[in-house]
Image (cartoon, rainbow, N blue to C red; front, side):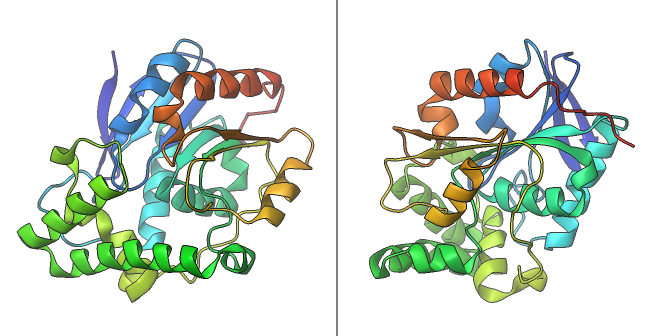
Length: 272
Protein backbone atom coordinates (compact mmCIF):
# COMPACT_ATOMS: atom_id res chain seq x y z
CA UNK A 1 0.00 0.00 0.00
CA UNK A 2 1.52 3.32 -1.07
CA UNK A 3 2.34 5.82 1.66
CA UNK A 4 1.49 9.42 0.70
CA UNK A 5 3.45 12.38 2.03
CA UNK A 6 3.73 16.05 1.11
CA UNK A 7 7.32 17.06 0.33
CA UNK A 8 8.34 20.50 -0.93
CA UNK A 9 4.68 21.22 -1.66
CA UNK A 10 3.97 18.19 -3.89
CA UNK A 11 2.32 14.82 -3.16
CA UNK A 12 4.84 11.99 -2.98
CA UNK A 13 3.97 8.29 -2.84
CA UNK A 14 6.28 5.54 -1.55
CA UNK A 15 5.73 1.84 -2.09
CA UNK A 16 8.04 -1.13 -1.58
CA UNK A 17 10.90 -1.76 0.79
CA UNK A 18 13.77 -2.68 -1.54
CA UNK A 19 17.40 -1.77 -0.86
CA UNK A 20 17.48 0.97 -3.51
CA UNK A 21 15.10 3.77 -4.49
CA UNK A 22 13.60 4.44 -7.91
CA UNK A 23 12.21 7.97 -8.31
CA UNK A 24 9.71 8.17 -11.17
CA UNK A 25 9.04 11.53 -12.85
CA UNK A 26 6.18 11.92 -15.34
CA UNK A 27 5.59 14.47 -18.08
CA UNK A 28 2.64 16.09 -19.85
CA UNK A 29 -0.31 15.64 -19.31
CA UNK A 30 0.26 13.13 -16.56
CA UNK A 31 0.55 12.80 -12.79
CA UNK A 32 2.11 10.19 -10.52
CA UNK A 33 -0.65 7.82 -11.71
CA UNK A 34 1.26 7.29 -14.97
CA UNK A 35 3.55 4.85 -13.21
CA UNK A 36 0.94 2.55 -11.64
CA UNK A 37 2.05 -0.54 -13.58
CA UNK A 38 5.72 0.18 -12.93
CA UNK A 39 5.12 0.62 -9.21
CA UNK A 40 3.16 -2.65 -9.05
CA UNK A 41 6.03 -4.45 -10.79
CA UNK A 42 9.18 -2.84 -9.39
CA UNK A 43 8.01 -2.42 -5.79
CA UNK A 44 8.46 -6.18 -5.35
CA UNK A 45 12.24 -5.61 -5.29
CA UNK A 46 12.75 -1.86 -5.16
CA UNK A 47 11.52 1.11 -3.18
CA UNK A 48 9.38 3.06 -5.64
CA UNK A 49 8.80 6.78 -5.21
CA UNK A 50 6.39 8.66 -7.45
CA UNK A 51 5.52 12.34 -7.32
CA UNK A 52 3.33 14.74 -9.21
CA UNK A 53 5.36 17.60 -10.67
CA UNK A 54 4.68 21.07 -9.26
CA UNK A 55 1.49 22.52 -10.72
CA UNK A 56 0.36 19.30 -12.40
CA UNK A 57 -1.97 18.22 -9.59
CA UNK A 58 -4.05 21.37 -9.03
CA UNK A 59 -7.03 21.79 -11.30
CA UNK A 60 -7.36 25.54 -10.65
CA UNK A 61 -3.70 26.43 -11.17
CA UNK A 62 -2.96 28.62 -14.15
CA UNK A 63 0.48 29.79 -13.00
CA UNK A 64 3.69 27.84 -13.22
CA UNK A 65 7.19 27.39 -11.87
CA UNK A 66 10.74 28.12 -12.94
CA UNK A 67 13.26 25.47 -13.98
CA UNK A 68 15.23 26.13 -10.79
CA UNK A 69 12.11 25.68 -8.66
CA UNK A 70 11.17 22.33 -10.20
CA UNK A 71 14.73 21.03 -9.87
CA UNK A 72 14.85 22.22 -6.25
CA UNK A 73 11.63 20.28 -5.53
CA UNK A 74 13.16 17.13 -7.04
CA UNK A 75 16.31 17.66 -4.97
CA UNK A 76 14.27 18.05 -1.79
CA UNK A 77 12.32 14.88 -2.50
CA UNK A 78 15.52 12.92 -3.18
CA UNK A 79 17.12 14.23 0.01
CA UNK A 80 14.03 13.29 2.02
CA UNK A 81 13.38 9.81 0.65
CA UNK A 82 17.02 8.72 0.22
CA UNK A 83 19.36 10.85 2.33
CA UNK A 84 22.24 8.37 2.36
CA UNK A 85 21.97 6.63 -1.02
CA UNK A 86 21.92 7.65 -4.63
CA UNK A 87 18.66 7.06 -6.46
CA UNK A 88 17.71 5.57 -9.79
CA UNK A 89 15.72 8.03 -11.91
CA UNK A 90 12.92 6.75 -14.14
CA UNK A 91 11.84 9.59 -16.43
CA UNK A 92 9.35 10.34 -19.20
CA UNK A 93 8.62 13.38 -21.37
CA UNK A 94 9.01 16.60 -19.32
CA UNK A 95 10.10 14.35 -16.48
CA UNK A 96 13.15 13.69 -18.66
CA UNK A 97 13.81 17.41 -19.13
CA UNK A 98 13.57 18.23 -15.43
CA UNK A 99 15.18 14.97 -14.34
CA UNK A 100 18.13 15.45 -16.67
CA UNK A 101 18.70 18.93 -15.27
CA UNK A 102 18.69 17.51 -11.76
CA UNK A 103 21.09 14.72 -12.79
CA UNK A 104 23.53 17.13 -14.45
CA UNK A 105 23.49 19.49 -11.46
CA UNK A 106 23.58 16.74 -8.83
CA UNK A 107 25.42 13.77 -10.37
CA UNK A 108 26.48 12.60 -6.91
CA UNK A 109 22.81 11.85 -6.10
CA UNK A 110 22.04 9.72 -9.16
CA UNK A 111 23.12 6.09 -9.50
CA UNK A 112 21.34 5.23 -12.75
CA UNK A 113 18.88 6.72 -15.21
CA UNK A 114 16.02 5.02 -17.04
CA UNK A 115 14.70 7.51 -19.60
CA UNK A 116 11.70 7.07 -21.86
CA UNK A 117 11.22 8.66 -25.27
CA UNK A 118 12.98 12.01 -24.74
CA UNK A 119 16.72 12.29 -25.26
CA UNK A 120 18.72 15.31 -26.40
CA UNK A 121 15.56 17.18 -27.41
CA UNK A 122 17.03 20.60 -26.58
CA UNK A 123 20.17 20.10 -28.69
CA UNK A 124 21.12 21.57 -32.06
CA UNK A 125 21.75 18.03 -33.34
CA UNK A 126 18.15 17.11 -32.56
CA UNK A 127 16.80 20.19 -34.32
CA UNK A 128 18.88 19.37 -37.39
CA UNK A 129 17.60 15.78 -37.37
CA UNK A 130 13.96 16.85 -37.79
CA UNK A 131 12.34 17.25 -41.18
CA UNK A 132 10.50 20.48 -41.97
CA UNK A 133 7.22 18.61 -41.48
CA UNK A 134 8.32 17.28 -38.09
CA UNK A 135 9.44 20.74 -36.99
CA UNK A 136 6.02 22.07 -37.95
CA UNK A 137 4.27 19.34 -35.98
CA UNK A 138 6.36 19.99 -32.88
CA UNK A 139 5.78 23.72 -33.06
CA UNK A 140 2.05 23.36 -33.68
CA UNK A 141 1.19 21.17 -30.71
CA UNK A 142 3.59 22.91 -28.33
CA UNK A 143 2.59 26.48 -29.17
CA UNK A 144 -1.08 25.46 -28.96
CA UNK A 145 -0.52 24.24 -25.41
CA UNK A 146 1.48 27.35 -24.54
CA UNK A 147 -1.32 29.58 -25.87
CA UNK A 148 -3.91 27.54 -23.99
CA UNK A 149 -1.90 28.19 -20.83
CA UNK A 150 -1.93 31.92 -21.63
CA UNK A 151 -5.71 31.87 -22.22
CA UNK A 152 -6.41 29.83 -19.09
CA UNK A 153 -9.81 29.08 -17.62
CA UNK A 154 -12.41 26.81 -19.16
CA UNK A 155 -11.27 27.59 -22.71
CA UNK A 156 -7.68 26.73 -21.86
CA UNK A 157 -8.79 23.51 -20.19
CA UNK A 158 -10.84 22.57 -23.26
CA UNK A 159 -7.94 23.17 -25.65
CA UNK A 160 -5.59 21.21 -23.41
CA UNK A 161 -7.88 18.21 -23.14
CA UNK A 162 -8.55 18.30 -26.88
CA UNK A 163 -4.81 18.21 -27.59
CA UNK A 164 -4.37 15.38 -25.11
CA UNK A 165 -6.97 13.36 -27.02
CA UNK A 166 -5.37 14.20 -30.37
CA UNK A 167 -1.96 13.04 -29.14
CA UNK A 168 -3.48 9.87 -27.65
CA UNK A 169 -2.32 10.70 -24.14
CA UNK A 170 -3.00 8.06 -21.52
CA UNK A 171 -4.08 10.33 -18.66
CA UNK A 172 -7.65 10.36 -17.39
CA UNK A 173 -9.19 13.55 -18.89
CA UNK A 174 -10.49 14.44 -15.44
CA UNK A 175 -6.89 14.96 -14.33
CA UNK A 176 -5.83 17.00 -17.37
CA UNK A 177 -5.89 20.79 -17.00
CA UNK A 178 -4.36 23.92 -18.46
CA UNK A 179 -1.98 24.43 -15.53
CA UNK A 180 0.06 21.47 -16.81
CA UNK A 181 1.06 23.49 -19.88
CA UNK A 182 3.46 25.90 -18.22
CA UNK A 183 6.58 24.01 -19.44
CA UNK A 184 5.50 24.82 -23.01
CA UNK A 185 5.12 28.47 -22.01
CA UNK A 186 8.65 28.25 -20.64
CA UNK A 187 9.80 26.80 -23.95
CA UNK A 188 8.12 29.22 -26.35
CA UNK A 189 7.30 32.33 -24.30
CA UNK A 190 10.27 32.40 -21.92
CA UNK A 191 7.79 32.25 -19.03
CA UNK A 192 9.25 31.83 -15.53
CA UNK A 193 12.77 32.44 -16.80
CA UNK A 194 12.50 30.07 -19.77
CA UNK A 195 14.71 27.07 -20.42
CA UNK A 196 17.95 28.66 -21.62
CA UNK A 197 19.75 27.35 -18.53
CA UNK A 198 18.80 23.75 -19.27
CA UNK A 199 21.90 21.61 -19.67
CA UNK A 200 22.51 19.02 -22.34
CA UNK A 201 22.16 15.47 -21.07
CA UNK A 202 25.52 13.71 -21.20
CA UNK A 203 25.26 11.22 -18.36
CA UNK A 204 28.24 9.54 -16.76
CA UNK A 205 26.12 7.03 -14.81
CA UNK A 206 24.60 3.87 -16.35
CA UNK A 207 21.74 4.81 -18.67
CA UNK A 208 18.81 2.83 -20.10
CA UNK A 209 16.99 4.60 -22.92
CA UNK A 210 13.64 3.35 -24.19
CA UNK A 211 11.79 4.89 -27.10
CA UNK A 212 8.65 4.18 -29.07
CA UNK A 213 9.08 3.45 -32.78
CA UNK A 214 5.46 4.18 -33.75
CA UNK A 215 5.69 7.97 -33.92
CA UNK A 216 5.93 10.49 -36.77
CA UNK A 217 9.29 11.65 -35.39
CA UNK A 218 11.70 10.88 -32.57
CA UNK A 219 12.68 13.03 -29.58
CA UNK A 220 16.39 12.28 -29.90
CA UNK A 221 19.07 12.74 -32.52
CA UNK A 222 20.67 9.71 -34.20
CA UNK A 223 24.11 10.92 -33.08
CA UNK A 224 23.10 11.07 -29.43
CA UNK A 225 21.50 7.63 -29.60
CA UNK A 226 24.63 6.10 -31.14
CA UNK A 227 26.89 7.77 -28.58
CA UNK A 228 24.70 6.60 -25.73
CA UNK A 229 24.54 3.02 -26.97
CA UNK A 230 28.32 2.91 -27.38
CA UNK A 231 29.04 3.44 -23.70
CA UNK A 232 29.64 0.36 -21.57
CA UNK A 233 26.82 -0.36 -19.15
CA UNK A 234 24.20 1.51 -21.16
CA UNK A 235 21.30 0.01 -23.07
CA UNK A 236 19.15 1.49 -25.84
CA UNK A 237 15.89 -0.28 -26.66
CA UNK A 238 13.20 0.58 -29.21
CA UNK A 239 9.65 -0.63 -28.55
CA UNK A 240 6.72 -1.04 -30.93
CA UNK A 241 4.70 1.63 -29.17
CA UNK A 242 4.04 5.32 -29.33
CA UNK A 243 5.28 7.96 -26.89
CA UNK A 244 3.91 6.30 -23.72
CA UNK A 245 6.12 3.20 -23.82
CA UNK A 246 5.58 2.36 -20.15
CA UNK A 247 1.81 2.11 -20.70
CA UNK A 248 1.41 0.57 -24.16
CA UNK A 249 4.37 -1.77 -23.76
CA UNK A 250 4.33 -2.11 -19.98
CA UNK A 251 5.15 -5.81 -19.67
CA UNK A 252 8.01 -5.75 -22.18
CA UNK A 253 9.36 -2.49 -20.83
CA UNK A 254 9.24 -3.63 -17.20
CA UNK A 255 11.01 -6.89 -17.98
CA UNK A 256 13.75 -5.18 -20.00
CA UNK A 257 14.40 -2.56 -17.34
CA UNK A 258 14.38 -5.19 -14.57
CA UNK A 259 17.06 -7.19 -16.39
CA UNK A 260 19.16 -4.06 -16.89
CA UNK A 261 18.78 -2.97 -13.27
CA UNK A 262 19.88 -6.40 -12.12
CA UNK A 263 22.93 -6.29 -14.37
CA UNK A 264 23.87 -2.80 -13.15
CA UNK A 265 23.16 -3.45 -9.47
CA UNK A 266 26.85 -3.61 -8.61
CA UNK A 267 27.06 0.17 -9.20
CA UNK A 268 28.02 1.92 -5.95
CA UNK A 269 24.90 3.71 -4.74
CA UNK A 270 26.03 5.14 -1.40
CA UNK A 271 25.93 8.92 -1.19
CA UNK A 272 28.88 10.83 0.19
